[in-house]
Image 1: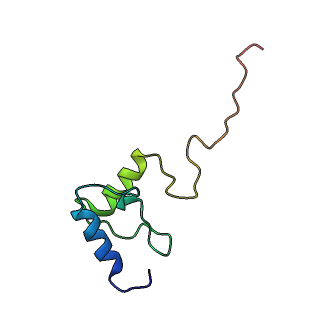
Image 2: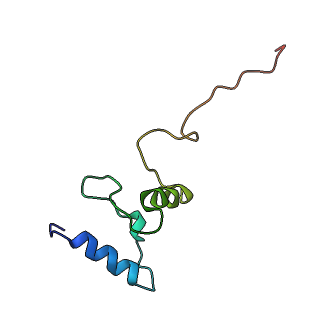
Length: 77
């Protein structure tokens, strides 16, 4: 947003809101594309666990499901 302190103010407002908005705050990234902060218990570890549970892509590295495996034919064939 270009306003110093705005991210903290937005995080506090989201944390105080009893009704979640469409984009939960753990889904918000910093301007540099990095995870940024997370004030809930557990901090960034909790944020990463939430994103993992949602199967969100958290890096450009391929996941196990992105890799292709060649299956060897049964023995004797």
